[in-house]
Length: 245
Image (cartoon, rainbow, N blue to C red; front, side):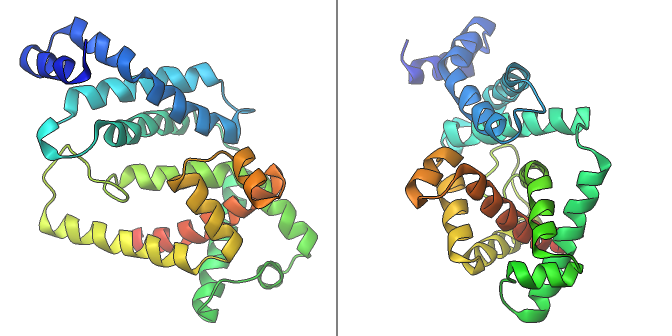
């Protein structure tokens, strides 16, 4: 059955069987989102668990989607799917406290130093700020690489209109202004990132490329892509967290 007919039938009848057909129709979105998240921290969670919780997000998206709002279902559903998976990860609280502490320390150092300098801080400058060797600084970055990805998704899920319109509620003027400020902070910070970090963020979030694909494109290793991604996210998260707090 064609997608438009399925949607028309479901909106009119709310029939469970029609909903099941829609779930099957869009299951590839769950696998796509779960696969991207699993690629970043697959050693800590099971892929099937991510898919299972992602399906809950897909069901939620199907039930709440408003075809009259002009938002593509694929875009809306991916936000809901990612949100459900992040909720699951938050619930199981799989991250060691030491990792969280290191991440907070790095976020604070980047935010304070870059505010002082008025530009992106270099690795040498951050390691000096932390009073550690450059080698130890690189180890810290490697240690928090998984956490930084999940933590930014956490923030984006808390502010669901941060990157895309949320079809659930009519946004109040105050909330709309807040979202615009957050969006501007994100754009400004991404634009101010060092060139390679900017490219990694753009390719990963906007072009939907994997670490492996980005590495081939930029002619660098996957571990180097991960490191660049982590540093970029820490810079972004420090700016966003300072606003939200």
